[in-house]
Structure formats: structure tokens, C-alpha cells
Amino acid sequence: MNKLFDLTGKIALVTGSTDGLGKAIAIGLGKANATVIINGRSSLDKLNMVVEEFRKKGIKATGYLCDVTNEAQVVEMVRKIQSDVGYIDILVNNAGINIRSELKGMSVEQFKRNIDINLIGPFIVSKAVVKEMIKRRSGKIINICSMMSELGRNSVGAYAASKGGLKMLTKNMATEWAKHNIQVNGIGPGYFATKLTVPLRKDDNPFNDFIINRTPAGRWGDPEELLGSAIFLSSKASDFVNGHILYVDGGILATIGKPSNE
Image (cartoon, rainbow, N blue to C red):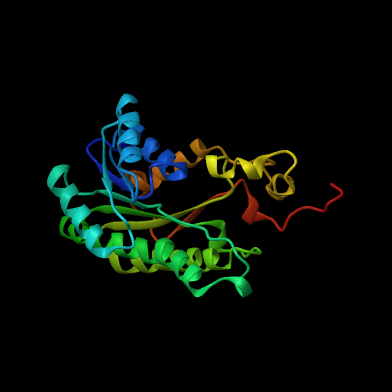
């Protein structure tokens, strides 16, 4: 049974993995014995620090700076990975951004920035990686979607548009590439306790109450609770799972909420 989830010998590229949920996913894949490729786009010092942190945990890791919206950089990064480490077996398109603004006040540039990183980035990276996957007739691609792939909320219109598009891109990638024995799926995280959400999780922040009351589990998620889904979709256990979005949200999408007097 353990062999179904064992990633020994696999090489996994996780974009946007120097922090947050991307870093947690990369750690999870590393603990399942994959060799992990860490990616960031701006700070070489931070990238090297994270790689060293992984190695101290006993995880085989290396890092590459690359802006996922720059196709030339992406193609060169993939070439270097193939030359230095080996062919990519698992791709997790995690790099993302959320520029919050009500649509009526959002600039076209801000809207495009959400689309460029959250939707066009996964297209660019997947296109560069899938060529060898097709030749080798093997590969796993996981796109990090969102509950906003399904729902709307004030001030996240551009983000929701990008993540809704990513959901449909995931399905279409699966449609085209399943015949090559490549599985393309998505993970839709709910609200997780990360460094970025620290201000939101303060007891005096109304948003904290909103999330706790809106989530049937009654709490924020722990990043480690995302790892099982990532390992499953990266492993042999998911060889006949394709075009699926796995929502890890504590049950939010299962309900319209509860009355305020409960």
C-alpha cells in the first residue's frame, strides 16, 4: 500500500515555493521521498535559505530563480533542471498573487497582473514541462486553484476570474494530455493559517469570525493538512484521476452557511 504513495525517484517542481502553502506542499512531497525543485522569482538569498532548510530536514532539494510569466526564463529553467537534476515527473503550479480591489476601482494593469501570474503562468510552465512528459508517457501536473474557482467575494474579482480560468485550464489540459498517461488535476485550498493570514486571524478581526463561522470545521486549516492531497495527486494512487479539482476547505463549499443565531 505504501508504494502507491511513495515518490522515491521522482523529481517535483513546485513554483512559488519559498513560502506559504507552496513551501508546505514542497516539504510534503520531499517527505514522500521526491527530489524537490524550489522556485522563487526575486530573492536568491531567500531561495538558497529555503533549499538549505529542506536539506537539513533530509529532503533532496535544489532551487531556481524564475518568473513564471516570462516564457524565455521558464524554458531556460526547465532546460537547466533537466540538465542538472533530471526530467520533471511532477509539476505543481502554485505561484500566485491576489491584488485585492473592488472591480470598479481596479486598474486594467492590476487585473492583468492577477491573470498573468495565476493563469498564464501555469500555462507557460506546463507547456514547457509537458513536452518531455509526453515523450516519456508519464507525468503529474497539479494546478493550485482556489475556492474562488467556484465562488465570488467582494474585492477578489480579478483573483476569482484567474482561478476560475485555472480550473477550466486544468480540465482542458487533462482532456488533451490524458492519452499520453499524464494526469492533470487541481487542488482548491480553503482558508489556511499561514504567515500571510496572521493579521486576518486575530481575535479582534471580524474576518476571523466570518471564516470560522462559515467553515463547517469551525477553524482555519493547518498547511500540513494540504499535504495528503498533494501527495495523492502526485503519486501512483491517482493514476486514473484526471481533470478533478480537489477542494481542501473544511467543508465550506458543501454548505451555504449557518444562521447567525446558531
